Image 1 (cartoon, rainbow, N blue to C red):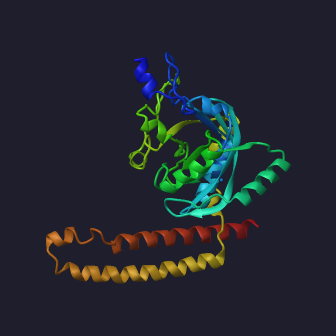
Image 2 (image 1 turned 45 degrees about the horizontal axis):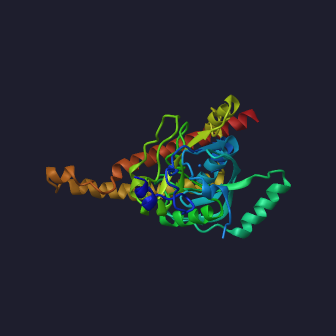
Image 3 (image 1 turned 45 degrees about the vertical axis):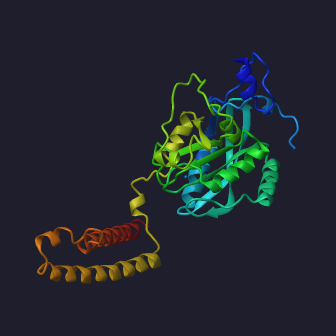
Length: 340
């Protein structure tokens, strides 16, 4: 047994294992804590290192603060349908905990699967300005949005994460989906790359050593795009109190006066003109469809709108929308004229 260990066993630094010693194995005992504000801002030769001598644990705790939560959701929704990215500021509390206190967005946008590289000049200037305002936190990772297609890392994202892990092996990549996120549930996940050398040696990339007792079920999209093969997921926790929870619940909350808010009259007129032109086109298409019904068989009538636009249904929806908007506009104008 000791002979096999000498042949196949090695530690993280690549040195041969001493006989009679166990090999440290990567586990998933790390969690990331992200603040609520940061979450909503998004919906923004190395020498001797102790980390090289200790096999990293993937059960890190990622703590997301209230500020970071706000940043994630705000930046992600502002960039739809394009991807947005930014850097996460925080601290590495211990070997099992990463705390994200705040984030800031980068002046980059991307297509449906990737974002551009990080601008080092903007990053340096932003960190210097944050230090002047009393924010001495370090960069603990980066985030970007996947609007509408889930949380996973593309090949470009993996290359970006490799650059971050070259600077700090504990760097975290957070992906948020502002489209699939709903009130009370944010579609977000944190990732870190798997060392390919460990897989080449035939060792288990991870083992569970945590006593938290839960496992997030990965999506099929994430598994297809290399989850648990090229990168692994890290558990996320949110540090928030009762007041912060109330603030999150009241965010973007509409009251009864929202429906009486008057829109810009010029914009309202343009919308009405476009709607009337669209209704005219739909009415002509519906008239043509009615004339074609007399020449169709029963089977053709059942499948005539499959994969095509139903002019009758779209015409009804357009009429209801135009009538509702104009009634609300007229009612609000009348109430404002009487009240003020």
